[in-house]
Amino acid sequence: MNNPKAIYERPLEEMIGKLLEMGIKDFSVLDAMRRVPRHIFIDEALRSRAYENMSLPIGYKQTISQPYIVAKMTELLVRNSAKQNEKFEKILEIGSGCGYQSAVLSYFADEVHSVERIKQLVSKARENLSDLRIHNVLIKNRDGFEGWDEEIKYDGILCAAAPPEIPKSLLAFLKVGCCARWHFKMSIRLRFLLAGFCIGLAELLPGISGATVALMFGIYKKLIECISKLKDLDLLVPLLLGMAVSVFGFSKLINFLFLNYTNLFEFFIGILMIFYGAYLFLSNIQKSKRKELFFFSLLFVISVAIGVAIGNLSGLDASVGTFPLVIYGFIAFSFLLIPGISGSAFLLAIGIYPLIIGSVADLNLLVLLPFTTGMLFSLITMPKCIYFYKIDLILWKFIFR
Image 1: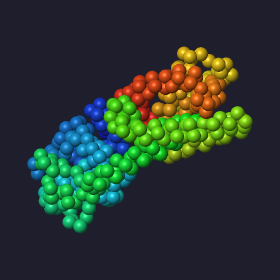
Image 2: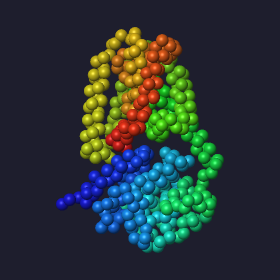
Image 3: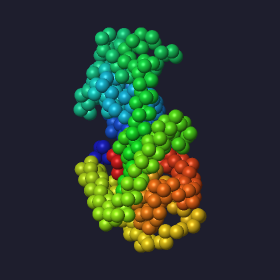
Image 4: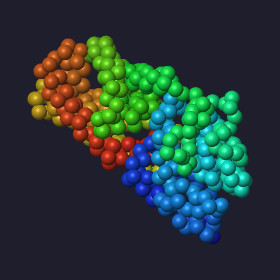
Protein backbone atom coordinates (compact mmCIF):
# COMPACT_ATOMS: atom_id res chain seq x y z
CA MET A 1 0.00 0.00 0.00
CA ASN A 2 1.34 3.44 -0.91
CA ASN A 3 2.42 5.78 1.88
CA PRO A 4 0.20 8.92 1.62
CA LYS A 5 3.08 11.13 2.83
CA ALA A 6 5.34 9.88 0.05
CA ILE A 7 2.95 11.29 -2.57
CA TYR A 8 3.81 14.83 -1.49
CA GLU A 9 7.57 14.44 -0.90
CA ARG A 10 8.63 15.29 -4.44
CA PRO A 11 6.23 18.27 -4.87
CA LEU A 12 7.42 19.58 -1.48
CA GLU A 13 11.08 19.43 -2.50
CA GLU A 14 10.22 21.11 -5.82
CA MET A 15 8.49 23.88 -3.86
CA ILE A 16 11.60 24.39 -1.70
CA GLY A 17 13.74 24.55 -4.84
CA LYS A 18 11.37 27.12 -6.34
CA LEU A 19 11.55 29.25 -3.18
CA LEU A 20 15.34 29.22 -3.44
CA GLU A 21 15.16 30.34 -7.07
CA MET A 22 12.80 33.14 -6.08
CA GLY A 23 15.26 34.50 -3.52
CA ILE A 24 14.44 32.87 -0.18
CA LYS A 25 17.90 32.32 1.33
CA ASP A 26 17.27 31.85 5.05
CA PHE A 27 17.80 28.15 5.72
CA SER A 28 15.80 28.18 8.95
CA VAL A 29 12.79 29.48 6.99
CA LEU A 30 13.29 26.87 4.26
CA ASP A 31 13.53 24.17 6.91
CA ALA A 32 10.27 25.32 8.52
CA MET A 33 8.56 25.37 5.11
CA ARG A 34 9.82 21.82 4.52
CA ARG A 35 8.52 20.64 7.90
CA VAL A 36 4.98 21.98 7.51
CA PRO A 37 2.85 19.84 5.15
CA ARG A 38 0.82 22.42 3.21
CA HIS A 39 -1.63 19.82 1.88
CA ILE A 40 -3.01 19.34 5.42
CA PHE A 41 -4.40 22.89 5.31
CA ILE A 42 -6.16 22.49 1.97
CA ASP A 43 -9.41 20.75 1.06
CA GLU A 44 -8.86 17.25 -0.31
CA ALA A 45 -10.15 18.18 -3.76
CA LEU A 46 -7.32 20.70 -4.18
CA ARG A 47 -4.48 18.79 -2.52
CA SER A 48 -2.88 17.82 -5.81
CA ARG A 49 -2.01 21.52 -6.19
CA ALA A 50 -0.93 22.03 -2.59
CA TYR A 51 2.75 22.66 -3.36
CA GLU A 52 2.28 24.92 -6.35
CA ASN A 53 3.27 28.53 -5.76
CA MET A 54 -0.27 29.87 -5.77
CA SER A 55 -2.98 30.86 -3.33
CA LEU A 56 -5.90 28.43 -2.99
CA PRO A 57 -9.42 28.83 -1.58
CA ILE A 58 -10.05 27.68 2.00
CA GLY A 59 -13.70 28.70 2.19
CA TYR A 60 -15.56 31.77 3.50
CA LYS A 61 -14.17 33.82 0.58
CA GLN A 62 -10.63 33.46 1.95
CA THR A 63 -7.46 31.89 0.55
CA ILE A 64 -4.28 30.26 1.84
CA SER A 65 -1.31 32.45 0.88
CA GLN A 66 1.09 31.22 -1.78
CA PRO A 67 4.22 29.55 -0.33
CA TYR A 68 6.54 32.35 -1.49
CA ILE A 69 4.54 35.00 0.39
CA VAL A 70 4.53 32.87 3.57
CA ALA A 71 8.28 32.25 3.30
CA LYS A 72 9.11 35.87 2.43
CA MET A 73 7.08 37.35 5.29
CA THR A 74 8.64 34.88 7.72
CA GLU A 75 12.14 35.64 6.40
CA LEU A 76 11.61 39.39 6.76
CA LEU A 77 10.32 38.92 10.30
CA VAL A 78 13.31 36.76 11.28
CA ARG A 79 16.00 38.86 9.56
CA ASN A 80 14.79 42.21 10.90
CA SER A 81 14.21 41.04 14.42
CA ALA A 82 16.18 42.07 17.48
CA LYS A 83 16.29 38.33 18.25
CA GLN A 84 18.03 37.22 15.06
CA ASN A 85 19.37 33.65 15.35
CA GLU A 86 17.39 33.21 18.58
CA LYS A 87 13.86 32.02 19.24
CA PHE A 88 11.22 34.69 19.78
CA GLU A 89 9.37 34.67 23.05
CA LYS A 90 6.06 35.76 21.51
CA ILE A 91 4.87 36.59 17.99
CA LEU A 92 1.53 38.17 17.11
CA GLU A 93 -0.06 37.10 13.83
CA ILE A 94 -2.95 39.07 12.37
CA GLY A 95 -5.13 36.82 10.22
CA SER A 96 -4.83 33.12 11.07
CA GLY A 97 -6.75 31.84 8.05
CA CYS A 98 -6.41 28.06 7.96
CA GLY A 99 -3.32 28.12 10.22
CA TYR A 100 -0.58 27.49 7.63
CA GLN A 101 1.42 30.65 8.36
CA SER A 102 0.89 30.04 12.08
CA ALA A 103 2.39 26.56 11.74
CA VAL A 104 5.50 27.97 10.02
CA LEU A 105 5.87 30.65 12.70
CA SER A 106 5.62 28.01 15.44
CA TYR A 107 9.23 26.99 14.70
CA PHE A 108 10.49 30.50 15.50
CA ALA A 109 8.74 31.33 18.78
CA ASP A 110 7.93 29.90 22.17
CA GLU A 111 4.38 31.19 21.65
CA VAL A 112 2.46 32.41 18.60
CA HIS A 113 -0.69 34.43 19.34
CA SER A 114 -2.90 34.58 16.26
CA VAL A 115 -6.18 36.43 15.74
CA GLU A 116 -8.80 35.71 13.09
CA ARG A 117 -12.09 37.55 12.54
CA ILE A 118 -13.94 34.62 10.88
CA LYS A 119 -15.10 32.23 13.58
CA GLN A 120 -15.34 29.17 11.30
CA LEU A 121 -11.71 29.60 10.21
CA VAL A 122 -10.62 29.78 13.86
CA SER A 123 -12.05 26.29 14.39
CA LYS A 124 -10.50 25.05 11.14
CA ALA A 125 -7.05 26.43 12.00
CA ARG A 126 -7.14 24.97 15.50
CA GLU A 127 -8.06 21.56 14.08
CA ASN A 128 -5.25 21.67 11.49
CA LEU A 129 -2.64 22.64 14.09
CA SER A 130 -3.92 19.97 16.48
CA ASP A 131 -3.54 17.32 13.76
CA LEU A 132 0.11 18.36 13.38
CA ARG A 133 0.61 18.38 17.18
CA ILE A 134 1.61 22.02 17.17
CA HIS A 135 0.78 23.25 20.66
CA ASN A 136 2.54 26.61 20.90
CA VAL A 137 0.01 28.47 18.71
CA LEU A 138 -3.01 30.10 20.38
CA ILE A 139 -5.84 31.47 18.22
CA LYS A 140 -8.54 33.98 19.14
CA ASN A 141 -11.65 35.06 17.25
CA ARG A 142 -11.44 38.87 17.18
CA ASP A 143 -10.53 41.90 15.07
CA GLY A 144 -6.84 41.90 14.27
CA PHE A 145 -6.31 45.60 14.99
CA GLU A 146 -7.37 44.98 18.59
CA GLY A 147 -4.37 42.69 19.05
CA TRP A 148 -4.47 39.94 21.67
CA ASP A 149 -4.11 41.59 25.04
CA GLU A 150 -3.16 45.20 25.74
CA GLU A 151 -0.67 44.16 28.43
CA ILE A 152 1.27 41.67 26.27
CA LYS A 153 4.25 42.92 24.23
CA TYR A 154 5.59 41.00 21.22
CA ASP A 155 8.99 40.49 19.64
CA GLY A 156 7.38 40.68 16.20
CA ILE A 157 4.03 41.14 14.46
CA LEU A 158 3.07 39.60 11.11
CA CYS A 159 -0.01 40.77 9.22
CA ALA A 160 -1.68 38.72 6.49
CA ALA A 161 -3.40 40.83 3.81
CA ALA A 162 -2.07 43.93 5.56
CA PRO A 163 -3.26 47.48 4.73
CA PRO A 164 -1.00 49.90 2.80
CA GLU A 165 0.14 51.63 6.02
CA ILE A 166 1.16 50.12 9.34
CA PRO A 167 -1.76 50.47 11.77
CA LYS A 168 -0.57 52.63 14.67
CA SER A 169 -2.68 50.60 17.06
CA LEU A 170 -0.44 47.56 16.44
CA LEU A 171 2.81 49.42 17.18
CA ALA A 172 1.78 49.62 20.82
CA PHE A 173 2.06 45.83 21.05
CA LEU A 174 5.71 45.74 19.95
CA LYS A 175 8.60 45.46 22.38
CA VAL A 176 11.10 46.98 19.98
CA GLY A 177 11.72 50.63 19.15
CA CYS A 178 14.61 52.85 18.13
CA CYS A 179 16.66 51.87 21.18
CA ALA A 180 16.04 48.19 20.55
CA ARG A 181 17.09 48.61 16.91
CA TRP A 182 20.32 50.31 18.02
CA HIS A 183 20.92 47.58 20.61
CA PHE A 184 20.35 44.95 17.93
CA LYS A 185 22.93 46.55 15.64
CA MET A 186 25.42 46.75 18.50
CA SER A 187 24.84 43.13 19.52
CA ILE A 188 25.33 41.95 15.92
CA ARG A 189 28.59 43.90 15.67
CA LEU A 190 29.78 42.45 18.96
CA ARG A 191 28.94 38.96 17.69
CA PHE A 192 30.91 39.61 14.48
CA LEU A 193 33.85 40.92 16.56
CA LEU A 194 33.94 37.82 18.79
CA ALA A 195 33.41 35.53 15.80
CA GLY A 196 36.27 37.24 13.97
CA PHE A 197 38.59 36.66 16.92
CA CYS A 198 37.68 32.94 17.06
CA ILE A 199 37.83 32.57 13.25
CA GLY A 200 41.35 34.01 13.22
CA LEU A 201 42.41 31.64 15.98
CA ALA A 202 40.78 28.67 14.24
CA GLU A 203 42.61 29.44 11.00
CA LEU A 204 45.96 29.60 12.81
CA LEU A 205 45.40 26.04 14.05
CA PRO A 206 45.11 23.24 11.47
CA GLY A 207 41.62 21.99 12.28
CA ILE A 208 38.08 23.20 11.69
CA SER A 209 37.61 26.08 9.26
CA GLY A 210 36.69 29.64 10.08
CA ALA A 211 33.37 29.07 8.28
CA THR A 212 32.51 26.33 10.76
CA VAL A 213 33.19 28.78 13.59
CA ALA A 214 30.98 31.33 11.83
CA LEU A 215 28.21 28.71 11.73
CA MET A 216 28.59 28.17 15.47
CA PHE A 217 28.23 31.92 16.04
CA GLY A 218 25.20 32.02 13.73
CA ILE A 219 26.72 34.58 11.33
CA TYR A 220 27.81 32.39 8.40
CA LYS A 221 24.85 33.07 6.09
CA LYS A 222 24.95 36.78 6.87
CA LEU A 223 28.72 36.89 6.34
CA ILE A 224 28.56 35.22 2.90
CA GLU A 225 25.68 37.48 1.90
CA CYS A 226 27.56 40.60 3.03
CA ILE A 227 30.63 39.72 0.96
CA SER A 228 28.86 38.35 -2.12
CA LYS A 229 26.34 41.21 -2.40
CA LEU A 230 28.58 43.94 -0.92
CA LYS A 231 25.93 44.91 1.63
CA ASP A 232 26.10 45.65 5.38
CA LEU A 233 29.86 46.04 5.01
CA ASP A 234 29.93 47.83 8.38
CA LEU A 235 29.62 44.36 9.94
CA LEU A 236 32.86 43.24 8.29
CA VAL A 237 34.91 45.89 10.15
CA PRO A 238 34.54 44.29 13.62
CA LEU A 239 34.97 40.84 12.06
CA LEU A 240 38.28 41.78 10.41
CA LEU A 241 39.40 43.60 13.55
CA GLY A 242 38.76 40.48 15.64
CA MET A 243 40.62 38.32 13.13
CA ALA A 244 43.60 40.70 13.06
CA VAL A 245 43.87 40.73 16.86
CA SER A 246 43.89 36.93 17.14
CA VAL A 247 46.10 36.27 14.10
CA PHE A 248 48.83 38.76 15.03
CA GLY A 249 48.39 38.23 18.76
CA PHE A 250 48.77 34.44 18.76
CA SER A 251 50.86 33.70 15.67
CA LYS A 252 54.19 33.91 17.55
CA LEU A 253 52.95 31.57 20.29
CA ILE A 254 51.57 29.01 17.84
CA ASN A 255 54.71 29.20 15.71
CA PHE A 256 56.82 28.57 18.82
CA LEU A 257 54.69 25.57 19.85
CA PHE A 258 54.81 24.09 16.35
CA LEU A 259 58.60 24.46 15.97
CA ASN A 260 59.48 23.20 19.45
CA TYR A 261 56.74 20.66 20.12
CA THR A 262 55.92 19.51 16.60
CA ASN A 263 54.86 15.92 17.40
CA LEU A 264 52.72 16.95 20.35
CA PHE A 265 51.20 19.80 18.32
CA GLU A 266 50.26 17.52 15.41
CA PHE A 267 48.92 14.89 17.82
CA PHE A 268 46.67 17.49 19.44
CA ILE A 269 45.37 18.63 16.04
CA GLY A 270 44.73 15.01 15.00
CA ILE A 271 42.72 14.33 18.17
CA LEU A 272 40.77 17.56 17.63
CA MET A 273 39.81 16.54 14.09
CA ILE A 274 38.83 12.99 15.15
CA PHE A 275 36.47 14.36 17.80
CA TYR A 276 35.09 16.92 15.33
CA GLY A 277 34.40 14.24 12.71
CA ALA A 278 32.81 11.96 15.33
CA TYR A 279 30.63 14.83 16.52
CA LEU A 280 29.37 15.54 13.00
CA PHE A 281 28.61 11.88 12.35
CA LEU A 282 26.89 11.17 15.68
CA SER A 283 24.87 14.41 15.58
CA ASN A 284 23.47 13.44 12.18
CA ILE A 285 23.00 9.67 12.46
CA GLN A 286 19.84 10.01 14.55
CA LYS A 287 18.10 12.67 12.46
CA SER A 288 19.21 11.93 8.92
CA LYS A 289 17.44 9.81 6.38
CA ARG A 290 19.17 6.89 4.66
CA LYS A 291 19.97 8.90 1.53
CA GLU A 292 21.47 11.73 3.56
CA LEU A 293 23.60 9.34 5.63
CA PHE A 294 24.86 7.76 2.41
CA PHE A 295 25.70 11.20 1.02
CA PHE A 296 27.45 12.19 4.26
CA SER A 297 29.46 8.93 4.30
CA LEU A 298 30.39 9.43 0.64
CA LEU A 299 31.60 12.96 1.41
CA PHE A 300 33.62 11.59 4.32
CA VAL A 301 35.31 8.95 2.14
CA ILE A 302 36.05 11.51 -0.59
CA SER A 303 37.47 13.92 2.00
CA VAL A 304 39.75 11.22 3.42
CA ALA A 305 40.93 10.32 -0.10
CA ILE A 306 41.67 13.97 -0.89
CA GLY A 307 43.43 14.33 2.45
CA VAL A 308 45.65 11.31 1.73
CA ALA A 309 46.43 12.63 -1.75
CA ILE A 310 47.35 16.05 -0.37
CA GLY A 311 49.31 14.40 2.40
CA ASN A 312 51.51 12.71 -0.21
CA LEU A 313 52.59 16.18 -1.27
CA SER A 314 54.15 16.78 2.15
CA GLY A 315 57.79 17.63 2.26
CA LEU A 316 57.71 20.22 -0.51
CA ASP A 317 60.53 22.74 -0.46
CA ALA A 318 59.28 25.58 1.75
CA SER A 319 61.07 28.20 -0.33
CA VAL A 320 58.29 28.29 -2.92
CA GLY A 321 58.00 30.98 -5.58
CA THR A 322 55.62 33.92 -5.84
CA PHE A 323 53.02 32.32 -8.10
CA PRO A 324 52.65 29.13 -6.00
CA LEU A 325 52.17 31.33 -2.92
CA VAL A 326 49.31 33.15 -4.69
CA ILE A 327 47.70 29.78 -5.50
CA TYR A 328 48.19 28.51 -1.93
CA GLY A 329 46.67 31.72 -0.56
CA PHE A 330 43.64 31.31 -2.81
CA ILE A 331 43.10 27.66 -1.80
CA ALA A 332 43.70 28.29 1.91
CA PHE A 333 41.22 31.18 2.03
CA SER A 334 38.67 29.14 0.07
CA PHE A 335 38.91 26.50 2.80
CA LEU A 336 38.22 29.28 5.32
CA LEU A 337 34.98 30.23 3.55
CA ILE A 338 33.52 26.71 3.31
CA PRO A 339 32.50 24.82 6.48
CA GLY A 340 34.85 21.90 7.07
CA ILE A 341 38.64 21.75 7.38
CA SER A 342 40.69 24.93 7.82
CA GLY A 343 43.10 26.41 5.32
CA SER A 344 45.90 25.81 7.82
CA ALA A 345 45.26 22.05 7.59
CA PHE A 346 45.80 22.31 3.84
CA LEU A 347 49.02 24.29 4.35
CA LEU A 348 50.24 21.74 6.89
CA ALA A 349 49.49 18.90 4.47
CA ILE A 350 51.52 20.39 1.62
CA GLY A 351 54.38 21.32 3.92
CA ILE A 352 54.36 25.13 3.93
CA TYR A 353 52.49 25.74 7.22
CA PRO A 354 55.76 26.61 9.08
CA LEU A 355 56.65 29.12 6.35
CA ILE A 356 53.27 30.90 6.45
CA ILE A 357 52.82 30.92 10.22
CA GLY A 358 56.44 32.05 10.66
CA SER A 359 55.94 34.81 8.09
CA VAL A 360 52.85 36.06 9.90
CA ALA A 361 54.74 36.04 13.22
CA ASP A 362 57.75 37.88 11.74
CA LEU A 363 55.79 40.03 9.25
CA ASN A 364 57.77 38.65 6.31
CA LEU A 365 56.23 40.69 3.48
CA LEU A 366 58.07 38.79 0.73
CA VAL A 367 55.92 35.77 1.59
CA LEU A 368 52.80 37.53 2.90
CA LEU A 369 52.19 39.83 -0.10
CA PRO A 370 51.73 37.07 -2.75
CA PHE A 371 49.94 34.87 -0.25
CA THR A 372 47.44 37.60 0.71
CA THR A 373 46.98 38.43 -3.00
CA GLY A 374 45.65 34.91 -3.49
CA MET A 375 43.49 35.32 -0.40
CA LEU A 376 41.98 38.54 -1.76
CA PHE A 377 41.21 36.88 -5.09
CA SER A 378 39.41 34.10 -3.19
CA LEU A 379 37.57 36.72 -1.11
CA ILE A 380 36.30 38.39 -4.29
CA THR A 381 35.25 35.25 -6.18
CA MET A 382 34.41 32.44 -3.74
CA PRO A 383 31.58 34.06 -1.71
CA LYS A 384 29.66 34.66 -4.96
CA CYS A 385 30.09 31.00 -5.92
CA ILE A 386 29.00 29.85 -2.46
CA TYR A 387 25.98 32.17 -2.42
CA PHE A 388 24.72 31.80 -5.97
CA TYR A 389 25.53 28.11 -6.50
CA LYS A 390 24.11 27.23 -3.08
CA ILE A 391 27.21 25.38 -1.83
CA ASP A 392 26.30 26.42 1.69
CA LEU A 393 22.76 25.02 1.24
CA ILE A 394 24.17 21.62 0.23
CA LEU A 395 26.44 21.54 3.28
CA TRP A 396 23.66 22.75 5.55
CA LYS A 397 21.13 20.23 4.29
CA PHE A 398 23.35 17.16 4.49
CA ILE A 399 25.78 17.96 7.29
CA PHE A 400 24.82 20.90 9.49
CA ARG A 401 21.12 20.25 10.01
